[in-house]
Image (cartoon, rainbow, N blue to C red; front, side, top):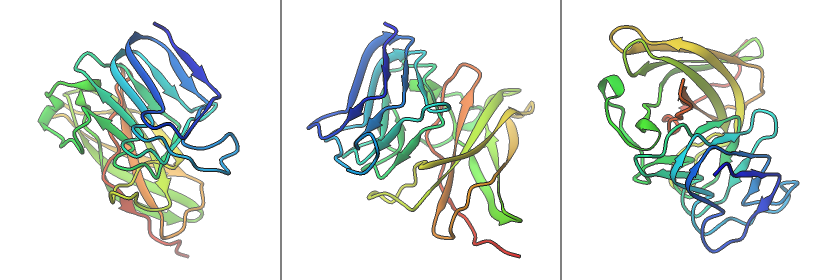
Length: 231
């Protein structure tokens, strides 16, 4: 229990980069998975970047010292087992992996369900839908909607990426910004609005992830191409 894995370079393995099973609590921060410490050499792992099985209350926390997860043959982060919960994934750089940046249940993209009533790893938390992504006066504006549990309070993080990965999916290469205290109504509906100051070209793609009050984090949303800056 309580594994702490920080500031390692984990690359070039034939299978997964990091594997944690039957564990509670812990933190991953500052790790370079699939690359070296200064990001100058890419050497992906042959499985998932991070594989979690029956893990509870783990922070994959890049808010102060980001984890970089890249070039995995499979998913960047894969979470299995219905007992896996409270896995908070925030502020990291996740890109150019083989399938998805985050995969809950290791079964591909999960569809959102009304009131988010399904069960599974990280409660199979619904992701969000981006309805607007635009540059205006040097800021990036990201707006969208969420369907979830009634009266739920969520956090939404926005990311950009240089493009799609080999499977045609967008992950989350660079953290842009977040909105906390996104409150869903009695019908389980809500909206978010995030502003960021990063410079992103028109070729880049925006995605978001959602986190609930228990730390459960969703898969990445379907992406929205960011428009070029306008006057």
